[in-house]
Length: 92
Image 1 (cartoon, rainbow, N blue to C red):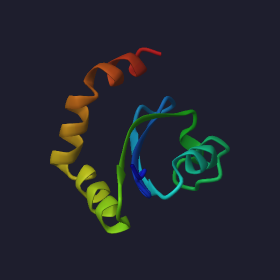
Image 2: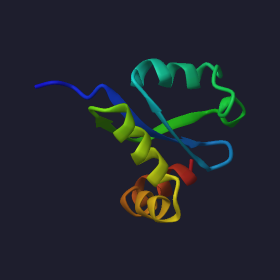
Image 3: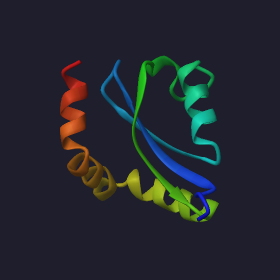
Image 4: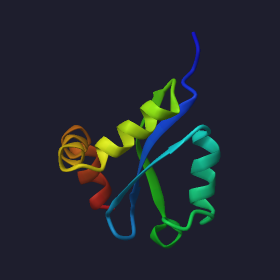
């Protein structure tokens, strides 16, 4: 069984309680970059928590999924499936 080559991920900021979505071909490496503040778009929003990820075989599929997750429907879907996790994180 092959592991996915590309990942879509969603981070939750414990500072401003907002979500950030991205794509990568190295989920652990990218997470470490976010944690160290090496990513311009999230360095001021730390600390961050990985709340969602999904694997894809193609970069195009991963980018398409990320684009969907940024739409109103995509955000609503994430809020629905992660409702318990988001509630717990807001109370930290």
